Every structure is written in structure tokens, then in C-alpha cells.
Image (cartoon, rainbow, N blue to C red; front, side, top):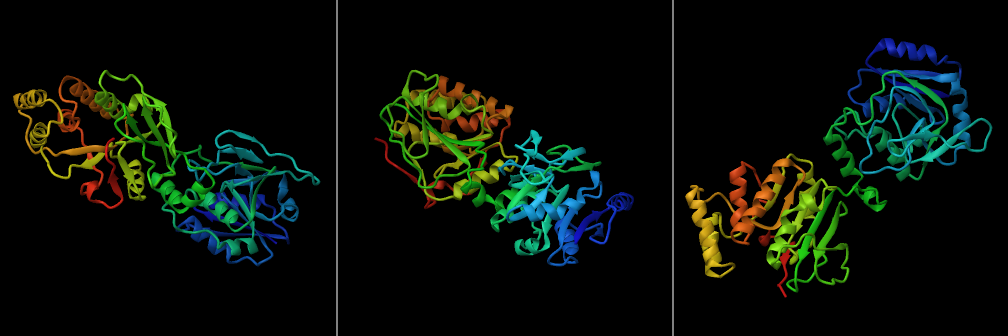
Length: 439
């Protein structure tokens, strides 16, 4: 028995679908009106089927063309270890996959890679055509009731109506089944364009659930770069004890460094005359260095990260509206106090530092504006305000002290920009964060 299952919020569309199916003694249709969610609705409908039935989950605005429902049992007899079967498939699941891809119009055995469609590959066997894929679109999902039960049905953990189809397909793969896109036609009258209407929180819920699978199968889009710079024989390159699967790692250097762990070694770009400012330039100019990445995380070369705490924080920041975040200073909250300390231990020329402080006083820069250690610095560096702040920051370092902590708070204040705390307290106090000695 073929059991068509449909979620209904427009009864007139459902009536048209039911009439178009030309149901017979081997097929029937069940429906739920105004279901609370896609999983709850489909699970309730699946509960009415018998173990040997084939479930066909259809959109209410869909029509099967050329009455191919008679071929559905033939497909399931021919397809080895069939899990989920449909007419629009995704060749490879990726962290950037979307949960609903349905276009309006005629869909025939389409496979996405992941945006462009191509015809379904033909297989030997009468007039049946199929290709193996990893995920199917929810416009038409078919599964044996016995397989549906082994998979545990649909899971109702997602906050909206997207990603349930890709989640359901991944459950089939995890249970040891194979998914197939078949070469049959449906007419989808009310389909939406790819990526329209999907909310970020839906993607994040799906990614969080399948993170281990995405990482294991190397399906993660690395849109964040962790980077550092070693200029002169000042530091050695440290392989972090924890490596984020969602980040690339880049080290700029003028030294013949041996490749270490996950670090990509690149030559310095546009280095200034002195070594300290050369490193500072690379720290500050992420927009010039990494235009292809959405976010960057500068770490001083002596920093070692030994757990995923920072990794999780980066994911949180990427999903938020925060443009910049840095490590709070562990001792001071005022750049004037920091300047005094730097003069005392001669971190830079006392005369240059004093000249910089005199400039701040001349423009009445307030005290106690806050102070960051920029040994770890997160930025969405393509944002125009961030680029403006970084350019100004570099100009101040060129004109005044090379101690970047003495100018970062100033440029934030000048441009009305906000840098959030990476954590409420300094990372120096956290057991997973450590600093090696300079050479």
C-alpha cells in the first residue's frame, strides 16, 4: 500500500492534490490540518501506516506528473538498502546546505551540487532512473514504513520548518541506509527560491546536532581564520593543543619555519621597517590579508589553546552581531595607567609614550575607558566600521608607540565602535590558555 501523507493549511490545494492522485485499491491519502510542526504532523500521519506500506510525504501544492505512482513499489524493489527517496536531491551534504531547496515549476529527477541542477543519472532496469545522493528535498519524500520506524521518524528539535528534510535524510544515512533521487516528474506550484526564508537559528540548530558528522566527513565550510605572525627570531611557532575544525590556521613569517601541525606558512606581506611594527601590521590588517574569510582571530605566536572553549566562543560570535571581541586586560582598565607601566618597564621609548598620552590629554580622552590585551583578537574584518577602526589603529601605531594596547581603546572611542569581551575575565586566568616564553 502506498500512503500519501500531506500537511494542509489550504484545503483547496489539498483537494486538488487528492483528486490528481487517482487513488486506487493500492493507495490512499492521509492529512493533518494546520500541524503544529512538520515532524509532529508527519509522524502522526506515519503512525496510521502498516509496516509494509510505503510512505510518500508530499507538499499540498505538488502534483505527480504522468501518474508514476504505479512505479513507486518498483523503485523500492530495485533500490538497494533504500532509505529516503525523492525527486530533488543533494549530492553531498555540507555545512552550508539549506533545508528546503524547492523551486516552483516542474522538477524531474534533479540533483543539486549544491546550487546547480543536473539530470538524474540513468541506471539499468526497465524504465527506472535513479542516482544515489545524500539528502532529498521535502517537496517529495518517500520511505518504507519499516525503515521510517527504524530511523525513529522525524525529530522535532528545529525551531522552524526548514532543515527537517536534510535532517531526516542524514538519519537514514546514520542508520545504514542509502538515499536516492529518482528520474520522475512533479509539478511544484508554490515552491520558493533557494535559501529564501531560512532563519539562522534553524541552520545553527541543525549544524550543532550534526557537527561531529560534518567534521568527520570534511563537510565544514571554514569561514574563519586563526592567524599569527613571527618576525625575526623572536618566537617559535606553537601547535595549539586544540584545533578548531571550523577554522583555517595561517602564520606569516620572514623565517624559514618548518611546517607545524595545521599552520599554513606564508611570507610576510608589505612588512614595515622594524620587526615589531611588521607583526602589528599583520595583526591589524586582516581585511587586506583575508578578504575571503568572514571573520578572523589573531593570536600572538606565544599563545597556546588547549581546549574547545575559545572555539565555542568563536562560533557564538560568528552567529551574533558582534563585530569585534578581545581579551580583557588582567591588571588595568585605563590606557593612561598602562602607559605609565609601559614606561616603567621600557616596553617602548618613554618619550614616545608620553607624547602619545599628551595627545590624548589634549583631546580630553577620558580615563578608565577599558583596556584590552590584544593577544587574542576576534573581528568580522569585512565590516566597514571595523576596517575604518583598523586603518586608524595602524596610523596611530606608525605615528606614536608601537604598543598597540595604548591606541586600541582610543580608536574604538573615536569611532564609536564597540569591542566586546571575549570572556568576562582575562584568559590568563583560564587553565586552557597559556603563554610560552619568547626566544
